[in-house]
Length: 590
Image 1 (cartoon, one colour):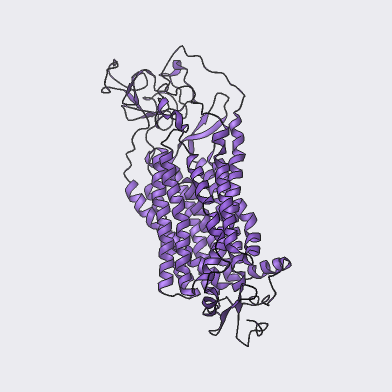
Image 2: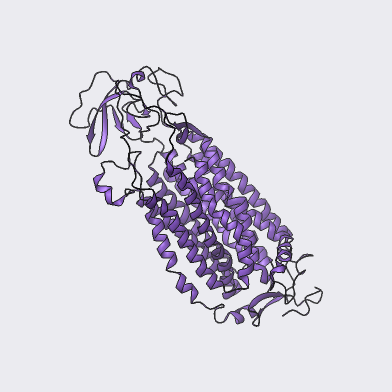
């Protein structure tokens, strides 16, 4: 699959979230939130189960012919066959699984966050929300690391010991499906515990009595506050309109949307960036990406919540804190320029075949008689430090297996003084299987600076969420979160992976092309151009984030000091109450 198609699968989660967030947040605010969370657990488990189905209905993995094709002059070239694999139809199963996962995630992030805010005092809300959001990030951390390790297990677990290939072989496929079955089991184990929680935790009414309203005051801030507003679904359009007219709320929503575009893009393609820039295997790159990206995000969420909670920041100071952390993250995001590593020499792509042939053409006089196949990518590293597309394109005529790895001899495209007879040991080989080791030494520094950038990026996450909960009417908090997550998905999470995928595809310099001339995945990327493109996207989005954060601070108008919040026991809903006599339509509330 192309990166853009992989990004479409990733975005399917956010499409479902976007479609359902408004409805779920509006209806669920007046319902039994813990039971909604039980429903969310069921849908998450079902989505994970569906996502794993292609493994069971696709049959055993067909290993295919070996890719270590040496130079055989008598080889017959395979003709073009128009038959396409039925496995491509499983794309829609993956999308369906992601849609179900998105349906399950909707109540979790909207109603779950509002339930936390209901149940704790104002100054502790940011701490609990930060912990909750950090858990939602540490979960993917386990997924990244565990998923990377599962890729080292052969896809058909029962056949692992009977296969003679290793991870270095491009035909290798890891056991990607095991993690989804584990996720299904864990999610379904939470259904009963969530169902046992009461509608409101004991003491919630007393906690609400001690809260003070910080709702942003504008001409529309109290338009629809009356005792019966929101109990009927017919009030839904008016509630949406009232929220959209809150300028501070909309500024915060736009800032989180642009930030989500960057974070979801990197969450999807950071392993690919690390793999190509530093010449690592896909499994190790995924493990490294998860070990840096996810803990950094979790730490940032917790730190943001703890700092806001300990300093008991007001709504305006909370927004100022988020603005400061975003500015620091902007400076650190230029690490991608420093981390860019030039591509290692690649014969026919960035390096000529000993001065022969043309750039962009893998076939030259030294391998013209080998009848090599462009569709079989099996990179080898020559003794000359140049990487070749396959042993065949390197002109290698013989090979020896040494310690689960192949070494090659008598390679016509690799400049050697004398012909070598294959010995029993690997000394004297002309080429060995695998990519050439990168000479780029920036990986540790890149990971350190990128970790700091992630921490400061996500330190703004919890303060922004708390600011949104404070600047809107109390009984419209769940709806406000629903609008936020809908816009966040619509403007950020959905286009993010697609934009990153198309951008990364645009830096490709060597595509997989089969016998029919059909383009497949990308084998080689222009590392320098990839890094610059990612910096351009990241910096642009962060500048937009900072602008709207600053605008929200400038526009915010706090209510008078004597505005408080009351808890309606009769209807079991939270309402914002203004006790200021100068604010009309608020005199009879509470």
